[in-house]
Amino acid sequence: MKVCITEKPSVARDIARILGASKSHEGYFEGNGYQVTWALGHLCCLKAPDDYNAAWKAWKMESLPMFPERFSIKLIDNAAAKKQFKIVKSLFLKADCIINCGDAGQEGELIQRWILQMSNAKCPVQRLWISSLTDEAIKEGFRNLKPQRDYDNLYLAGLARACGDWLLGMNATRLFSLKYSNSQVLSIGRVQTPTLALIVQRQDEIDNFKPEKFFVLSTTYRDVSFKCDKKFPSREECEKALLSVKGRAFRINDIERKDGTEQPPQLYDLTSLQVDCNNKLGWSAEYTLNTLQTLYEKKLTSYPRVDSRYLPDDMYPKCESILRGIGNVKPISTAVLSGPLRKSKRVFDSSKVTDHHAIIPTGVAPRDLNLQQAKLYDLVARRFICVFFPNCSFQSTKVTGFTDNSTLPFVASGKTIVNPGWRAVYGKEDEGEQKDGTDNAVLPVFKVGEYGSHSPKCEEKTTQPPKPYTEATLLRAMETAGKLIENDAIRDAMKENGIGRPSSRAAIIETLFKRNYIFREKKNLVPTPTGIDLIATIKFELLKSCELTGIWEKKLRDIEKGKFDSRNFIAELKDMLRSLVKEVKGDASGHRIMVSASNPSKPRAKYTKRKRK
Image (cartoon, rainbow, N blue to C red; front, side, top):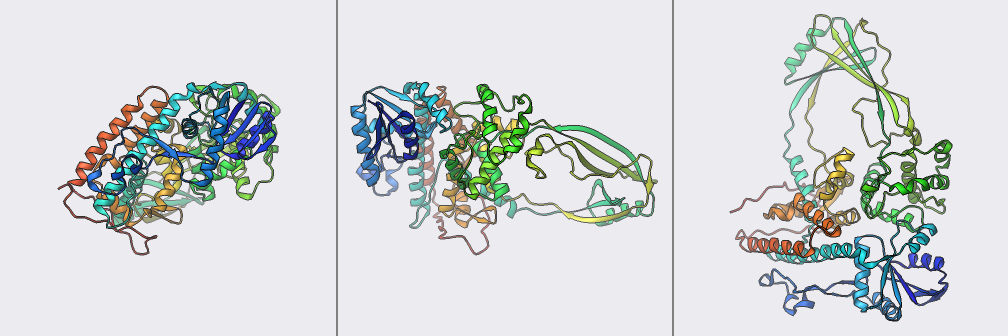
């Protein structure tokens, strides 16, 4: 008997139907030589500190750091999980072969490997690896099952991540809570703390920003605003310049026209989709991921937890049928099918795809979607459609004018869409991620040498502070280790050094809310006094460093690729924790952090760096 195990009952139901395992039992399906069972998400977890050492149950400074000789797992203390595991184990022990049908990613591999270990299964294990839950994808996956050993490095990376998070979270949380809190927990994490540091440091920049006044000169000619590029430090200098041009004829001196093109935006990975949903729909990263998961389970979109924006080359022949199957935007999708589909390296590049390709529709026609699911599906479908459209072509115009007897240039810029190309997919909406650097204003026809009256004016301006993080901009900063990068190519190159993984970033942001380290002001993410004080109290820079956390993420990916030893990753983390514990224990400041019970109603405390003594 072949036993298949999935992560969720809904996936097990689909696989059982396709395999012909139609007889339902408690905890599994059976038929046609198969038994199909499931986990309930996680069934196992790493043991708690006191499972290794009874003395570690009490939170005591002298017990730190806690380093288990060997990490072990246990069943989650939940009646439903224990009941399901008993069923799974009984099936495994009688199986001729087990097929791991867990989610095709690092966490999915770890979940299933732990269940296999806890069950003491001895039979051969194969791996099902699919990127969507359509019937075709599942059938193709079963035709191409792989030996489980092919995914050993994926498991080792997941295990290193789990053990590393245990070591840092358990030790640092206890350390800072015992040292700096009177009675409440101060949660510290390998990813959450550097993320909080980003938000706190941005708030520090805003709070300490000193606006500076400056003055600009502009003039209106033929209802078009022309701006002088020069900034004036004082009103007197600006008004002096204004007097030099006032009452004199304004003459068009130069007209520069350039033809340009704008490529379609790339396909979505999880982060870019979460960014768009936050910007356009006001959704949180977690809400976007949860809604996308429902579309995946409805077989409408491909696997959600991905960091690639490319498709493998062998997907190209399948794209025509996907376009034909798209539902609510079908008139637009069929428009690209009149000729051969465009094939671009920005879309199809097998070298840029590792575990999973970009998020795309599966070609299954959507139905029975609620409003939010329909909005998200529409975003994914339109993005997929637009990559097969031609570039948008436009003409940018720069018009320069002077007043008689003056050397101060005034400039107006505009852009005219010549052929909308891919932008036709979005109608009047401006959905492009890339900016061409020109204004969108449509200018009237000007001629070199024409002149006439104009209306100059002097305006007072002030320099602006940095903007607070939104979830959209924070996700981008996490993706590139704190560096806000708009260019797609550079951002892709930075991904290996990002904070966290696409699948975990939403949960990290939600954790900061739950710990009352941050709160929302409209769409802005603002640190609470507790969050500010915690980051100021942490003198150990490595603990809150984006760059170091990014390096750790890269090492975890290298473990996955077989380029780095997971034992070295854990050893390096232990060395860091020894130094951290020594430094915090030696702090004689007596400082205590007040833990926020809820969003602050009073003005925020300013972030101040605590100096070493």
